[in-house]
Image 1 (cartoon, rainbow, N blue to C red):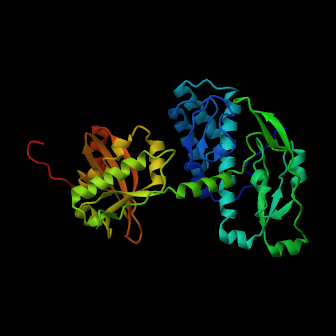
Image 2: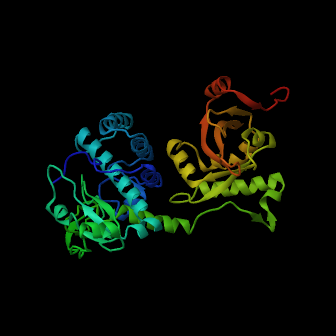
Image 3: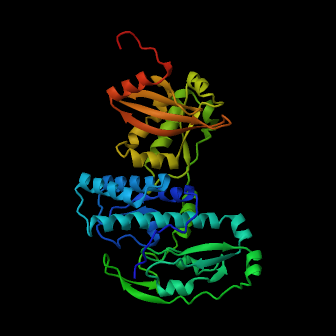
Length: 400
């Protein structure tokens, strides 16, 4: 029976890792629940019946806001209603029930994966050799989850690969770390892992029979944090890094046109990586005056995969070709505007369309990063320039 109550009432975790887990997901349009495997949910964002990127992007933004800003279920329900109305989405179930399922499932899996990452750092694994399964009180407890509660196993026991919570819809269970000292203090000993019994389940989307561990709801039989770690390891092996040499020459020693060509090619490849970009690339080179205004020791501007994915989510209208223009735009901005936060500036540049970039230097001034890229219309761009302190304006030739 489904468990009720605040799904995260027992969680004490900084949302940073949960946010990182959620941001690395890519949209996967689906018509029915079950099309996406349990393992694939670690990298894919899907809402059963949501078949368009635009609809998924709006749901991703709403869930992302819940993770970063602490949006409540009640607030998410309002966003859900607006999103459904905007896209004319015909969904199954009542709006209140469907909003709760989307909200709680995504939030719980994100926090679970984030917690798993924290628990599996080399330091954490050394300090806390044991993990303990904990069932939290609820109105309708699952007998199997209650039976698992208190089980203490080594942190590398294979059992955690299938039984790390959440282990079902509205599951409230968690895992706590245990040190040698706590084991001795409580008189605990390492248990035998509960038997891994599987039962057949017919996937309604594929019609295939899958074997699911008893006590775990179909779709929850994979440890999302573990699958995320596997995906990150695979992604790291194909990670892009800024080129340092071309044809035996250091990139910074190349003539400006040749360096810009290298930057353009790398950005185009980076923005088109499937299923998602990995690593970072050199996005462009700042003019000396802009470098000086930014207070940076380098003219190089970097673009990270995390920033690109975030920007692609918030501005899906931007194409790989537009990202490929970054090098030319950064090299010749029309305006440099002051930002409220120290070490940041806005650049406004035009090439066919008008674009705004926010560029940040690191605290030590040794690196610069693009934080966002937005396409703007003429009037909002003019208003932005009027309302901000202009640090630099390109001189216009007569007749322009």
